[in-house]
Image (cartoon, rainbow, N blue to C red; front, side, top):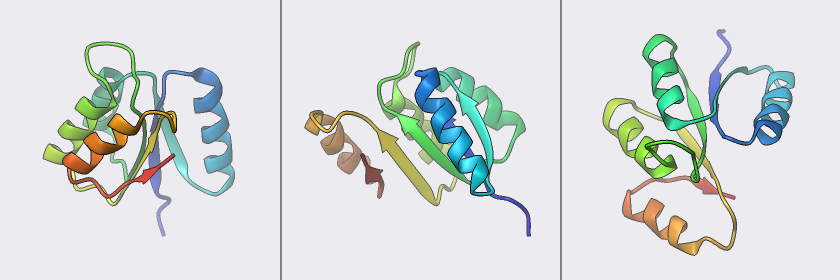
Length: 104
């Protein structure tokens, strides 16, 4: 059976590296991107099974923008969103987008 591929979209290198190391140890192929723009470029060439997306991303798009695009162009079985527990407005926006997501 082919390995599942997870893309981590996170602008903090320490968080991205920690997630990447641990997911690789669990047997996943891991792709990383530091911005939504970079993630979109990567998925043009690679198939991704799961996404871990930071909501607060640098550049022209935040995590919500990326989620909207992914929802429009891909069927995604799991999406994990990373943001501060204090950011209730972000959780509400995810619900508005009709995303079934694990929120941390």
